[in-house]
Length: 264
Image 1 (tube, one colour):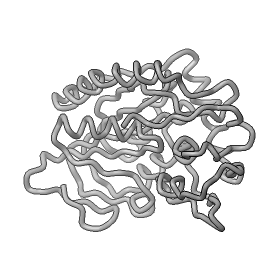
Image 2 (cartoon, rainbow, N blue to C red):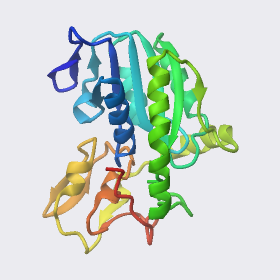
Image 3 (tube, rainbow, N blue to C red):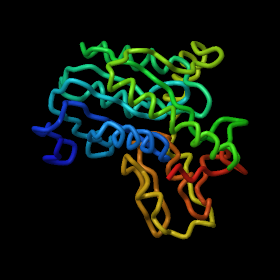
């Protein structure tokens, strides 16, 4: 696979027509995508702003979508790309990362793939450190739990990569308790109430611009050395977790909450 233009890729003569498409705000899904790519020797394509605006891939045989679970569902950014992208055909696999459980994320992804007329591959979930802190009582994991999750994830991802290579079409995900309620009731409220205007930087902000560089949607700009959020927010919290001075807040939801620095 070689890149022709931002967001446009072409199969190389040596490719077996497998592409790993990933979206990540805090590094968990990127880590999983790169781990699978290294094990299978395949190319990856990041869903960034350029790809989101102009999603295009050459038709292929197999596609692996790697993304974090957002409120027990598929991130709206990923769903939009699936809806907009050209007809790539092929068989589509899902690998989602989550802090604890994923509800009916697999069912949502498979519905979106079938709506494009594409074939379904297997679907897997991988437990990774928690990143989301914008619900009451939600916080990041302790460092000990973070390390334990990442250590357990490596053999899990190896097994998933091997299953994909063998053509396994299993659905092996941890739905958790009350998956239908979480995905069908809480997820719609989450997607409808994403409000970038709730973000602000407090007086600890040093104007370093790391939040600008971390945002996968290029939705943050610096104005007078302070971050300003636009309207294309995925609420991934990459800006919040990546701030070196813990200066970014989302309303009062993030008050006294911790940060996750990523798996790398």
